[in-house]
Length: 76
Image 1 (cartoon, helix red, strand yellow):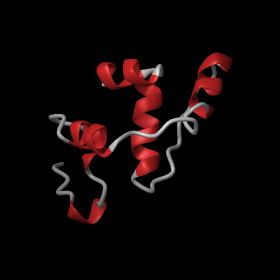
Image 2 (spheres, rainbow, N blue to C red):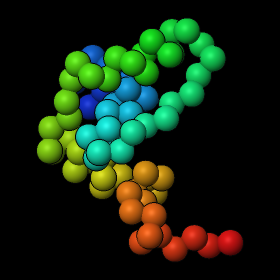
Image 3 (tube, rainbow, N blue to C red):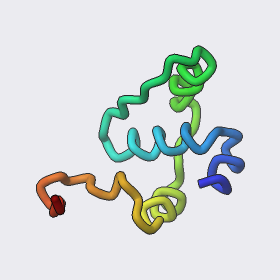
């Protein structure tokens, strides 16, 4: 994530939000800090490549991998 963020001049949080957005999902970030709220809005001026998207998908234990919640087995 850091490598991708550096390549785009963004934070890892911005890359994460962009990754979610490019999947067709509306991200719902939350912050009470003005600078982070501003950063959360600065995800529309870049796009992740297919390769970058694949690298993020390949990360182990990535919480966002349950794109389709109907395919997730929740262990209680």
